[in-house]
Length: 234
Image 1 (cartoon, helix red, strand yellow):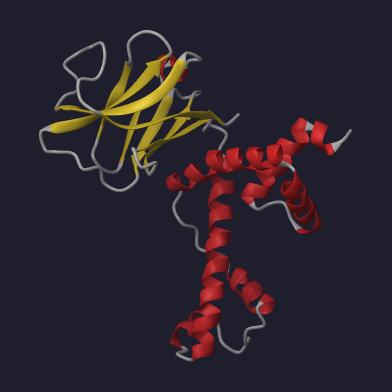
Image 2 (tube, helix red, strand yellow):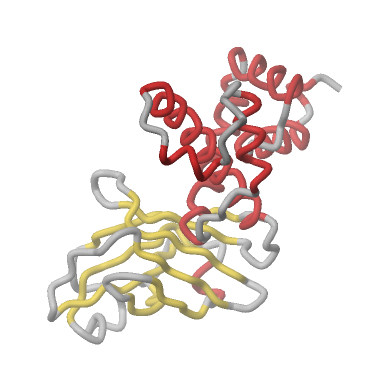
């Protein structure tokens, strides 16, 4: 079967490429396909959008000692100092090398974080909600098995002391459904109801409401600050 016609393989390779698990010649061949295949580039970007938000829910993982040794070997750095002793070196060569090392480690951690989170089978929904400037403000993950979701604010939302954020599922027809009230920092766990992830949900939105939530049971009364939608992970 022609690669362009093999949809499952294209999805699999795009996901592995984004995660960083596609290695060597396979990765180079995939990058060659990307140059001449607009549809494949779109699939790859979709996987990037699906997986990148998951890093918000994982703490940084310290690399194994072997990672430092591998970085030293690949960059031809001197082996006479232990990794922690590099911080004592003030030479120009050290600082130039450290910049490259830091970039490599950062890339490694992104891959590790994404893989660790993706390996968690419970998380089958993810959403990023953005403001009017398309800046990510909230990241949501949903566990349909446990019927729960976690909402994490990226940074602190500017919420007046007499106001509160409220999360809504906006259906294609009918009134918005309240999914719960949010804090102005940190994360909140809410119930993941069928009304939150149903096929009729056209949009997720966050409005600014009085303390205790919207006084109107049929929808928000304040301005919509953030919006986005679910991506099904499995």
